[in-house]
Length: 192
Image 1 (cartoon, rainbow, N blue to C red):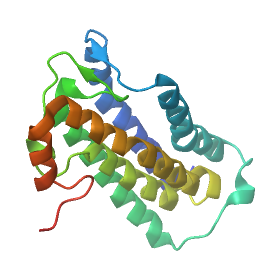
Image 2 (cartoon, rainbow, N blue to C red):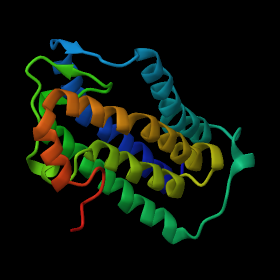
Image 3 (spheres, rainbow, N blue to C red):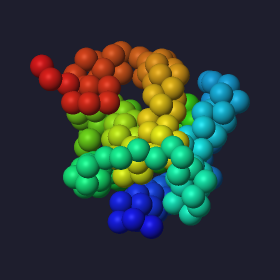
């Protein structure tokens, strides 16, 4: 494995470690889902393909070598910095969101609107993290299927998901969420 492939897998391991305690806590919570779970299953399956399965095949076999592309060496180091930023945002978002995190569009009993920490600036920092991750993956794994395809998959996921999530939050928190939307950026800092 190349150093950039190792960096990619270390970052993925870091995200698994960050999310593990949250997943354990979630097992004891009751959630309500206003959406259709089948769409989530399809979207998460595609994300798993782009973020894990294809990179694993790429790194362990020559099967995807036909889709390789060349990049200057500095882009791998840029990818390493970007993926480190993605993991940092991912960690901070989990710390600040706590038990309110859910992988699917759902709210839990006594769900709280979190507006502190990173959420004071960005409404959806997990999505910010994934945008950064997708760009970094294309730089770290120079392969159209194992690297760049994840950016396309993420774009589709984000497009189908973020509007529905905003509607769910508006329904759950009403005017408080409207005020929050006006002062924060959706996935990047709002420049006033």
